[in-house]
Image (cartoon, rainbow, N blue to C red; front, side, top):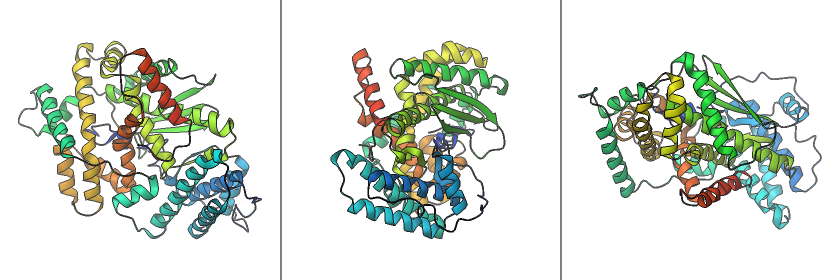
Length: 459
């Protein structure tokens, strides 16, 4: 999700086996609909608004621009809790891409010339980044002209690709060697990626047991989160199951501390995927992120710019990065193995004795994702043809069938950095992991502060 998108919302490693959980977790992207033009207004939606020179007025008009872009390009709008009257006005106006770009440029100019109080500077930087992303996205979808990978990441997400150093490549080689040492030899003679895929497939949850496993996974993630973060009374997550959708999992924030997580039963899910999804989409991931931001910034401080979240924007990058890191914050590898062994494996009808090795291998596989950005860059910039990109993902990330990841890259391009580089950047912004209660408390506190402040960039 995105979601808060992508939508395909990190890396369900085997689709089946090997697509990026980007495809699984794009908690809001990967949906398609053609917006039917409603009866048009005689003016653009922002022209009807009063336009005093203050940050709240600019923020309200920015929300109209975001909603207007969502009408023309549905993948661009992750979610909105804007007033129904505003959403209806924007829908009826059905502004053109030229009008959207023109108003975004006008808002940029207003921001540039407005005198801001010191306490409003974070809002100014936030709006500046969001408006720049709107204009970059409009240029892409209006003319079908894309920037190179690194320039696109900067324009849409205000981020840069982390360098793939020799030391990091060496660490991955050692990780792959260890993974292969731990794998059973039942698929001997096959490629390394196929060997891993065959092993991972052992832990697919039978469809009839999926609801029980996912519900228990959400409960475990919620209980761990509540040990460190206070959530509003009555907050909740609904779990639904669907078919014939272009995404595997989708999280939608509904407002008032309520989210809906939809799982596509057409995509198989392993036990470890279930816990990953529960933390990423629910607690302490997207649901908690959106709930706290909504309560603290939109309702608590009255900042209207939080009424909408654009998919291709710095705001969404932070949301996805935090959600992608959420499972690592909630549970250490040993704690994760305990939850899966004692709760999820029995519910899935699997032997708990297999949990420890399985979780350790799954954790090691996730560490290989640092190879993906360099491959994506070469592929999307035209220097690596499809077949060679496919082979590199198989060899370097142990994806047995990388087609799904490449198709995702074709559609969402540099957004994939939120799932690969994003968690590493979140980790760098938090105190180092530790087993002491005081240091764990400090990490959770820093994580919560990231959710409730208007940051425009991560370390």
